[in-house]
Image 1 (cartoon, one colour):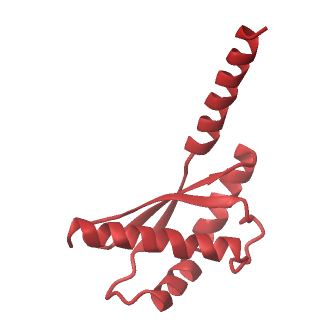
Image 2 (image 1 turned 90 degrees about the vertical axis):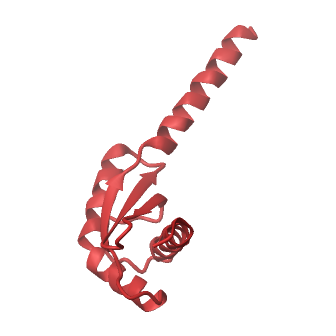
Length: 119
């Protein structure tokens, strides 16, 4: 499959799973509305999709959310199958992504350094 089509599929999966989370259609109590899908990597043969999940909440909540999403992967895959018109819906694998939290920590440190040097 061409790179352009895989990129479109990555974006579509990210959008659809994100909307399932925000709309509360995933009934697992570990999956909260503050989880977000930051990146999706679909394999070239469409057999797997790695979804990276981030959150503004604590690391413990993120871990529980990823476990909750993984346990709801069958439901999410079925919803994707209904929304997308492709021959094979990839098997979903969820992973923790700490990049958003790390980015906010770096910005906070820079702001703290600027505040200290301005005094």
